[in-house]
Length: 178
Ligand code: FES
Ligand code: FES
Image (cartoon, rainbow, N blue to C red; front, top):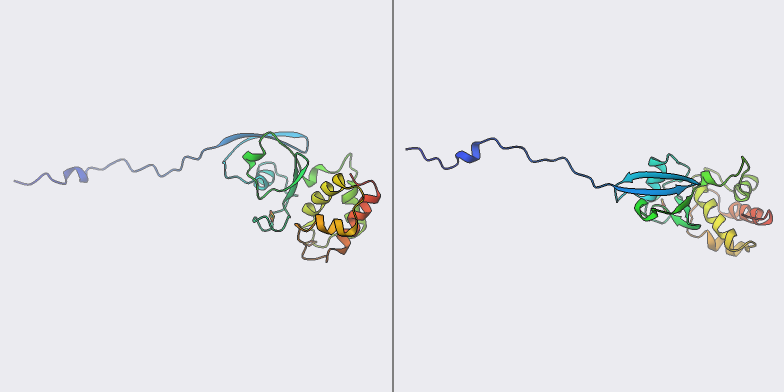
């Protein structure tokens, strides 16, 4: 008589569900004055939220490891490298990006300084440089060149040699900065 051992293993089984169930979390972030509501994966970085969910691509991604500063934005008024923060951590916050600086079509004084003093070449570092400079001038309306260099030491530029960037921030300070 044939053994029935193993018969069960020949019966087709429902294949395992390989589809990943992704947990999404609701977030509400006010970006440049407009409330943005979305459901995001907890691992989504703030910089990705700004670029991919909000479509604000002025905030750049350079290193994604908190070194270059290209991704700097203001979160509740503080300059933050947005690759170091999850979007869910910014829930309930006010975020300002480079797109939110100009008013009524007028450049912000720091933007104007970069324009007038040739504070950029390729421009990749520029949004981050400007956002960090805005915070500096809010804290110190008349910084020395050394203080400007110190404030910007977390923002890397591969093109300008920095002198024109320092000129740009000095220009903005003379114009009343913020
Ligand atoms: Fe965030 Fe470089 S991309 S610090
Ligand atoms: Fe090119 Fe700064 S202007 S990296």
